[in-house]
View: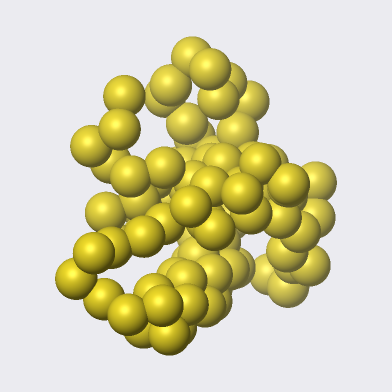
Length: 88
């Protein structure tokens, strides 16, 4: 399966909000880029295998990448949201 991945503004905002007091600005930016690549790669591999169970993301699919849940639809793999698994 070869999908074109698009990120919603909300997903990009949430990705940009990832910070850590333990890492420099450069290290945090590298982590975000690596995370984006891993998310896109995993969507390509898994496709529609994991339907989202959360009511607010009904009709989307979910993958786990590091400690993040990523919700997406397959309208050209449109990534809807990303949040840390400890977030409610």
